[in-house]
Length: 414
Ligand SMILES: NC(=O)c1ccc[n+]([C@@H]2O[C@H](COP(=O)([O-])OP(=O)(O)OC[C@H]3O[C@@H](n4cnc5c(N)ncnc54)[C@H](OP(=O)(O)O)[C@@H]3O)[C@@H](O)[C@H]2O)c1
Image 1 (cartoon, rainbow, N blue to C red):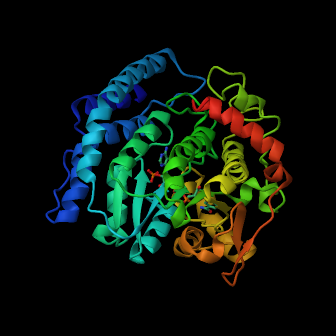
Image 2 (image 1 turned 60 degrees about the horizontal axis):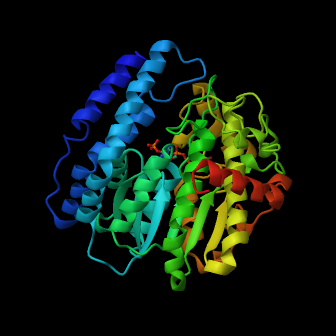
Image 3 (image 1 turned 180 degrees about the vertical axis):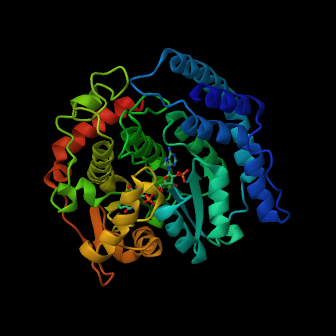
């Protein structure tokens, strides 16, 4: 099955067949969106297809799976060689007349918190939202269903499980010639029931590779764009979580987040290294997610330490509340998916709707009252925001510096 699926994906990639059935919008804004859509598909569809269609193999990969991976990697290499010139043309044609709106990039804006935040900001009339998504068609459909005004957003492809895709995204964003005001690193994968690890295009364990390393590279590449816009008081927000903070009840539900001495990460958290976990331990999908959230919050604090004074950029993290029905839990057991929202609504009272969570994140994007840098924001039940405490591990600046140095090497910045 895996072989058939991967080859089918490969054929679609090779022929550019995916995405050809798009409808052509007739108005000017639609035409701009369509041109990005129509010319982006080879790269867009290929990267998404690889992410979803069989490239991610486990430690226990069988010989035929390994050969599928070899085929897929050859296709991937061919696509990434062919993509840049085409991508530049797409971004050129997606370029819009400069408007007076501020620009925010939101990764993972095709569902859940990212979409709700995009909706809140786009509908305010003050923001142009770049929906930075791995599945272009899903993002376009979600934006339309959420009622985002046509001239309030642009969808650009990024697959955070591919560092090459992150680099391409930055090029495509720059080609739009928009000034960047705010970057929101929101996308995440969570694999609580996985028995075996799966890997990113560059071979990192998927949760840490996507949630942390993909965003780490994206933020680093876009720092210069934000700094250029210093007078606009730019912001970078990386979404954190209570589950990565072991100073809370939720953070103490096993398996607990713990980066240990970062020896697993330093060794590459790959199929070839002794461990795929940051702390060098046995694979655990739920822990890998929680560890990635610790990395997200440590990264914000390290960004603040390194760059706030120099660049004027505000760096923040947040816990938006328990949005118990988002796609994040898509791979959980069905009984969990039924009971978890009820438990959060009636027992912990930590439940928030997607809309409420989106309003909270939108505040961190745009509210002058939440403009201080280096904070981890949370909300009281009366919706008032406050600066929350983080766990000892997240507050550990020595660990933050080490994480930064190891991550820089892994993503090829050093
Ligand atoms: N739900 C909660 O209770 C909760 C609590 C605390 C923090 N958070 C945080 O909130 C953020 C959003 O999560 P959510 O609950 O809204 O979940 P969600 O609905 O599943 O949204 C996650 C988004 O990330 C995208 N994504 C996943 N892998 C990607 C990749 N390789 N490249 C690009 N995009 C990718 C998904 O794209 P597709 O649509 O293509 O899958 C989706 O748009 C996460 O950072 C999560 O850790 C959530």
